[in-house]
Length: 118
Image (cartoon, rainbow, N blue to C red; front, side, top):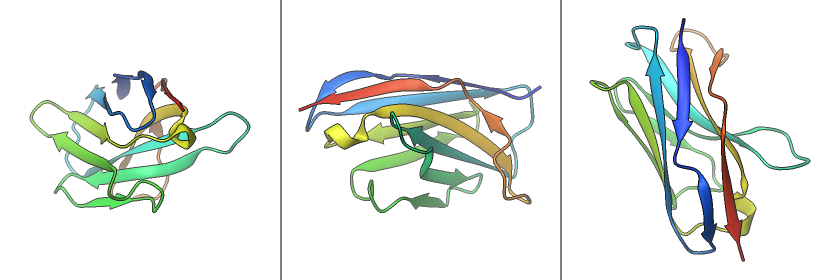
């Protein structure tokens, strides 16, 4: 059974940085797409960024140039480096995974809180 476990959330002042990690287990992740989503209070969950097994990346416009997603295939881990954080980045951040051949993310972590104070 695939499990995703996030870590690295916390509180930071605006302009600061945080690095999130996601450890995947319980499967073989070749040809998977890994992604980060976030959900702020009172808002719908939104896509933040994603990375394919081959290393191709995609970002939401709101985080381009500030966030970087990376992965370590040998460790089955994905990272999210968040720089120049803004109060509007405050949310619960979720790691997600899907097979490359399907569109829906069907594996989710429990989430980690990121709070950016002004």
